[in-house]
Image (spheres, rainbow, N blue to C red):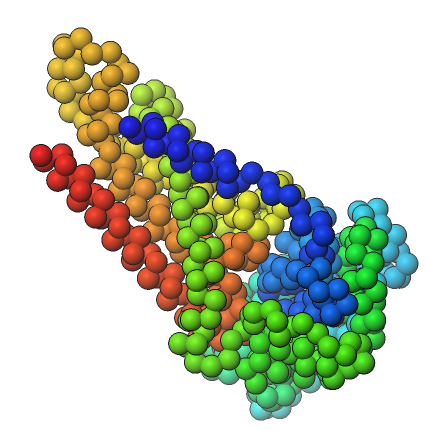
Length: 508
């Protein structure tokens, strides 16, 4: 009975991870996990769809530069909005600005291109509250060297970028020790005076609203970050109509207009799609768009409205991720646990490997799987979630078999039962409640871990959490966290009912 169940789970996994045909008839637009990238992604999608409806899909909020670039090389997306400084220094690893022609030549060797400058420069900068800067006499970045005790809260990506904090600290000889914070959360920390300085994008909407002083880059460390499209070289030929529509966006967005678009979302409560639609209506790029026909990513209204918006499809996506990954982990973990129990020399290596796999940071594992699989979305997410669910299943399988009394095994042997029969008819039935408890632990853990999968486009409740982080919207964060917590409680309850049924069956 157990092995029939495992075969069924393995079949489900095989169906789930079988590569689906690439949507070659649709232009795949990507975006990063911050407001401006979401908005630009929606503008690209709406502009192209206005020219040829249904030809463009927006893969929203796919994490940081590394994830987007790997997805682009793998062909999982075709184009996304990027910045010249990021391309030259973070992607191509140049120490400083390089000519655009050189950038194009180096990208062409990778099958990629850069072009269609959108019209604005969004550079990095450091900022601090105006009153504090005035009190300390800080105007330029070089002034920070006189105040090593100032608390810096910098975004994770900025701390690790080639053109971020390490080079900035060397150039200005800064001894401050920064704290890693999500970009949206850093604004709250700055407002609460828990930090003194943060990194910003110069088109951030909250600079003026919060009365921040943008510190002058007096040594010219930051290059220009002109917004443009980074794309696969085959995309214009595969989607000529949509691509011509994207080319008409060249030079259409000024820096002040980009600030206003960011403000419409972060300060006025518009969705990303609504901001994009209003921009295209107000410009001569396209007379009409289909942005309003797509579901909004950020919902206006209160917590209840955000909870109900797209609740069923997000629940379906989240359930799929949890069920298939736990099924895969069970189909893999139970046989591994059996092998570790039956062959004493395998116990520590198997448990050690399962433990080590669970220590790999989730986003790092997802980022590593993208180039390996050549895909973003469901497939790498399922593999990563299955890896994280392995340990409790393997461990409980070993423990369940170990707690079977030796006297029962000896009695079975005395009755002439073969080793396989003893395993199937004596040991596994007795160990099954503890194995099921391991599966329950894995399932409850996976409900929470699955929210990370949204950062590579796998959907689920994590979409709301990603948007909430990008917008610093606590209600949107709760709209993702509450259903996830409820699903974890329901999952635990269902497993406890199954365990009770097994106990009653064993007692009878």
